Every structure is written in C-alpha cells, then in structure tokens.
Length: 126
Image 1: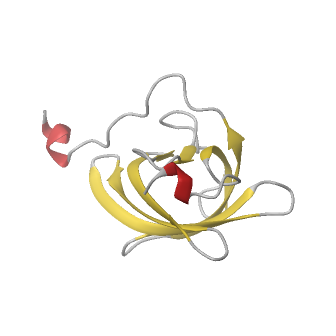
Image 2: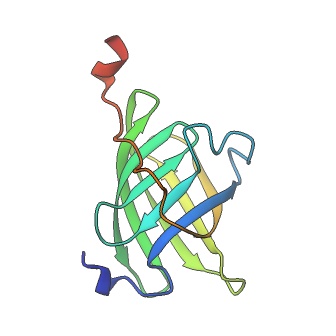
C-alpha cells in the first residue's frame, strides 16, 4: 500500500498510551509502545510484542493484520483503528487464538532508532 492510500489524518506514527487488557504498566517494556501507518515497513511494538503491520483503509478508519513475536513465540493477529473526536486513535488488537484488547494511541514522532525485528523462536536457544 502506498502512503497516498492512507488518509492523511491516520498517516504516521502513534504512541499507544493505554489498553483495556494489559493496562499501562508494562506497555513500554521493549521500548516506547508504538504503531505506524506509513505505508512502508509499518511496525508495532508494545509490551513484549514486535510485529510487522499490513494496513488498509476502510470506510470508518483503518484495518490491519500483523505478524511478529511475543517474546520468542511467533504470533499474528488483526486490528482496526478509527480517529476519535479528540484526535486520538481508538483501536482494537486481536491475537490469533489469544487475547484481544482495545487501545488508545496519540500522534507521535518516528522513533530515533528503528524498531527491532521480531525475534525468531530459534533465537531463544542461542
């Protein structure tokens, strides 16, 4: 997807500030909790989750799929976001065969250093 297809009000980086399932306490465990909707190499980092994001616009916002790792366990899932009247994203994140949570995100700058690649389960044994 090219950046032009992502509505400008959604394009860019977003800081995840709260979730209904996991709360705020450990959101930044692996670094600042972020999700990007740039149209190129989009990423998600939250708690112990590092993932690649594939996003597409919908009539009411954006929907996305993601694949990555929670610690060293391979996981994937789906999500969606819509822009609230307060300018924050209201979203839902689902882990395939696992938890699901709503989340709130605020506009943010791109991280100073790139978000790490999701680890392979093989890395756990090295």
